[in-house]
Image (tube, rainbow, N blue to C red; front, top):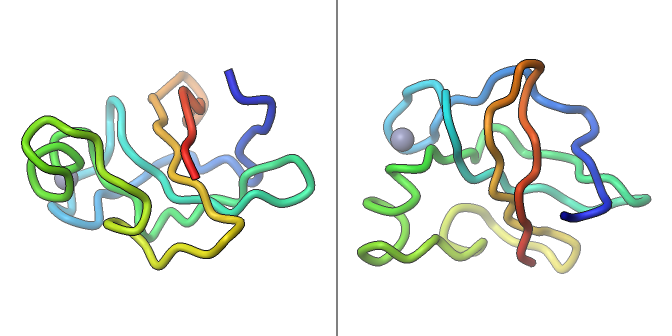
Length: 92
Ligand SMILES: [Zn+2]
């Protein structure tokens, strides 16, 4: 588990590809700063679109496929929890 948490933690995310609300798991670009992830919810992608539209046939997307990546940016794999989203994994 990554140490850093989302700050601010988004209460809801809308997929930038299909426009549906992310209600299970999805991908959320974020900038790591002071031990926390500053999310970029405008570039969030839902799980199915991450696989089908952004990634290559079953492979998780790379960060630069979903957002203009900077050196401090990471692509977070997040899942929906009771209050917002929880970071499952991150890759920069
Ligand atoms: Zn989608």
